[in-house]
Image 1: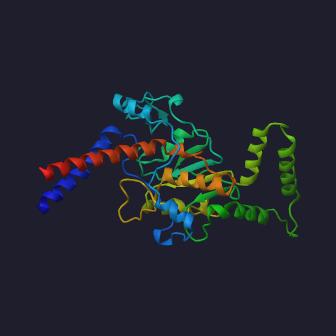
Image 2 (image 1 turned 45 degrees about the vertical axis):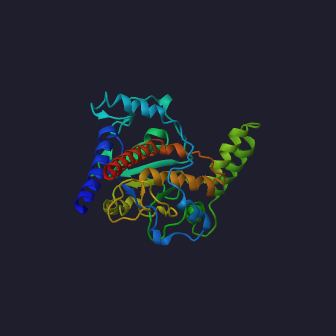
Image 3 (image 1 turned 45 degrees about the horizontal axis):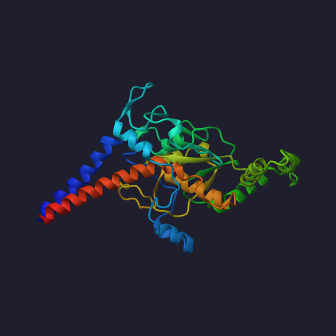
Length: 334
């Protein structure tokens, strides 16, 4: 009997994986977990953090309808006209939609630019980073290591844990401190150029586009986020992150560590805690914290659609597992 139950459990796992590969091969089959959160033993004692951890994953999100994905799934895979690959929903090689149009899926405007540095040994089809590029194409760039842009280090942060990493809440002040330290001349006096820039920014906020609340609000948000212009994420398995994170071009960039949250990925990386996030989850949670703590605005689902593809895949896999579990239960009852 024990051997039979063990075999049935193995069949359940194998069947779920095959369903995923057959119907959704263009999405993330072997998730890269983003080590941007501390281990679960370091969970904050703040009650709001505890309540958020207790929430059911992906519940209460303000998402666009998944009906278009359901229809595309029924039609099956499409052939990419650029590379010839057989894909579902989008081509992860060419970063182009397949079987659905731009008008049918949500397009998201982000408050800061996102750069993703992907490990060269990881295939494009195994990363959720592509979700961000498809859904926020004007604000997200993906680079394959060793390609790393030349960053102005007081305007960029790297979301990665480690000694000296700060919270999103403290991030902007730390960037200001870095800017101030580089804006002082040998005499210790602040640089005049920096002061003039701040004065111009303040004058623009009040004088430009009078009567236009939208313009004023946009400039106000930019002022709150200043000097942050870009956020960098590393997309790889944990065992491969060291080569990228220790690259000399990323040294001196402020590191940011997300508060502890649990991944909802269905195939966790062996030996890693459930606080290691998928890349798209890390981007989403960073922006959510940034919106609340840095832009000082109430969060109303502005970036929830970054999880548009991810949440759909999560529901498909869970539904498949539940159906097979019910089938096995019925067999045992008979």
